[in-house]
Each structure stands twice: as structure tokens, then as C-alpha cells.
Length: 522
Image: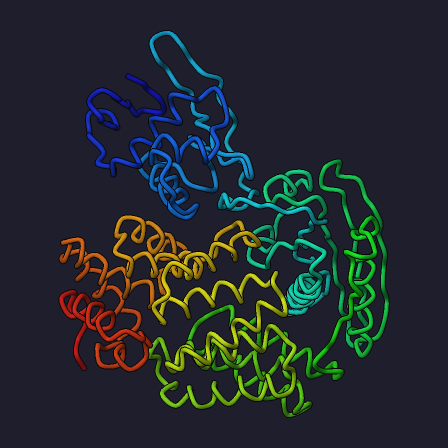
């Protein structure tokens, strides 16, 4: 019998209790908790857990993360505080609560501070490359509405660096987990598994911009170089190129000439005003409301009016148009032809842009042209194999086309660059696992998405169908009731028209679940 934090764990009776109340957990979740408790004096690797809990069978890292998340929930823990189960990125997990077994008490590890971001997903990395995370640049402008500009430049810098295959670059989602905090750079390096961190600030006044940047050694916390740039907004592209080139030069100085290929940046506009509108459009999209998506589309159109050849602005319209249509939001019923045309125009203008290729691939997936979708996704990841979002949405496109195992593989590749799992990745893995009839694994992933983004319709719909198949129809009905309170226009007939399952049997299976859960026909 083990006791800790008001809980008791009886490994003989296979019971977990909070006081006198038995807590029902899945057998694998219980086994994970028991193994961590019994080895609380050390960090346990994921391979050890696989051997103990799954008897060495091959399962995904996402499945292990789902079990860890379920264990934390059962114990009143979470990925932010980690007061009972602590993640040690790239190493494993450790049970860190004060544990009593007879007269033996383990040493407690202090809980994580409030400034620390959520837990990192443990995804194995086999990289022998210079590695870097770019933290969100601080907005020092007098106007707080300039936040979009600082965030936009940070995101574009991450994108620029990721285009260099001699670097390993952490994706936007995980870097932005540190937004609004002042973390210890050494802790950032440990959490994200990188050797270098770039941080900086931006001050924009009228047509003037000042950018301060510093590259820091994440092992020692020492500064490698720092620079201040003062220039006109019209020269923002030259500043971006100079900063990116300086970073690449600093990080790849030890690469052999045969390994380090020439690094050339390409911009899809030279119009600074159009670029600023594009940044505003992207910031609006991240707000993810019907009104914000409409604003994002309008701003992209204004950018294109200034530069009709701005490929990124064309590609940037794809997601807001498609999302509003797929989620059945009012005002978006005619959005898909516009999304298809925007995606097509973007690759005509920039065929070597991974961003444009995967956006066009995605819109083709949604209209059910699976061959075209997979073709453009393959092109995207060939152009930029470091693009986390291209891999993530490729995974969902593969799910719709029926290639479920490869779908999971693609999303797990995305998570190598994005260890703080974003909600869309959690959903994409859960969606594929649901169709693979791995119900418990699927539930953990889809629920993780819903916990982060409760208003995300695809996750709510998949959860409802999943719960029906798990003989939990009342819970499924509650899921649909909640969904319809926030998205009242969703119906079964619209779902049938807008969710592009290639296999008719799969479509019928999902629709049967949604019908049983109470989703209205019309």
C-alpha cells in the first residue's frame, strides 16, 4: 500500500482511492501510476514503461502521453504544475510527490512555477543538428494593438529558420507557450530540447521600427551575440533577412561545406504595407471566432489589393474560408470555391513555397480530391521537411483518405518540432485512432483537444461518435447538446457534405454514431 497527497494505491487489489472513494481508472493508467510510484527514486524512461505496461508491444508515443495525462487527471495533477508526475523532456517521467510506504518517505520535488508553460509531449528525437527555439518577441510599442506585429515577425522568423535543413527549429505553438513570461533560458532549453534560444523585442513607432535580438546558449545561459536594428518599416524584409542569416551563420559555423547548403530566403511580397495587413490577418485568424475569421479574410483581401502577387496572402485566406465552411458557421456557405481559388492562386505564384503547397493540399482534402491533396502535401514536406503544420494537416488529410497508420505517423513527426502539443495535433491523432477502433487511446487525445479548445467542432463531433461506440450514449448526447449551444447550425446533412471521408463505410459509421448521439438531420 502506497500513500501520497491524500491518495492510496493498493497494487495487490488494483485500487486507487482518494480517501475512502475508489477512483476508476483504465488498467493501463493504473499500471503506469503503479510503475512510477514503485520507481519514484529515479526518472523512468518511456521504453521502460512500454516494456512494463505494454509488454514491449509497439505503441505510439501519443498513446503513452495519453496515459500519462489520464494518470495526472486521476491524481488531481496537470501538465502545468506537475506536482505528482513530472515530465523530464527527452528523458522520461518521475513520480515526485511525497510518498509514504511504511516508514519510507521519498524526497519531494518542488512543483513547477506559475510562469512555466504546459508540459512537453515526450517525442523521441534523433537529431544531430544545431537546434534553436525562437521565443515571442516582446512588444515595446506604445500601442498595445501592435502585438500582432511582434508576434508576426517572430512567427516568420521561425518559418525562415525552419527552411534551413541544417537546423532543428521548434515550431510556433511551443515557442509561444512562453509568451508573456520571463523564463530561465536554461530551463527553456531543457524543456524544448534545444541548445540555443533567440529572444528579442520590437518597438514600432509610425514608420520606424527598432528590433533588439540576442542569441543565447541554452546550456550556460550565456549570450552568443546581440544586435540592435533601427530602420524604416519599408526595409523590414531586409532586416528579417539579415537577422535570419546572422542566426544561421552563428549556428552552422561548425558544419562541413558538404553538409551545409547555401541558404536563400525568398519573400512573396516587397510591399511593407501589404505585409503588415497580412500579419494582422494572421493574428485575427488565431482568435478563431466567426467574426475574427471574417476580419482575417478582409485583411488578406486588402493585402492582395496592394500586391496581387502576394502568394502568402492568398494562401493565408485558405484556413479562415475553409474553417468557417467546415464548422458550418453563418456567412460561410459559399466559402469553399473561394478557398480553392485562393489556394490555387498561391501555388501559381509560389510553387516552391511549402506554406502555399500544404494550404492548397488541405483545401483539396476538404473538397474530397484526395489524390490532389496528398500530391501537394508530399510536395510541401519535400520542400520543407521541418514544417510542423504541413505534417500535422497532412496527417488529417491521410485520415480522410483512409491511410490511418501513416496519418498518426505524420502527426507524430509534427510533434517532434512542437513538443507542447497543440489542440489540432491532439485531435488529428485522436481522429485517426478512433477510426482504427482504438477507442480508449482516441478518447484521451480528443479529450485533450477539447480541454484546450472546447469550441472546436470536429473534436466535439468525433467525441460524440466515439462515445456512442463505447456504449456511453448518454455522454455522447450531452456532447452534442453542448456543441449545439455554441454552434447551432451544425446538422447531420451538413456534416455529410463537409467532412470528406473517402470510404463510404467509414462515413456511414461516423454518421450512425452522430445520429445516435442526437445530432439533428437538418
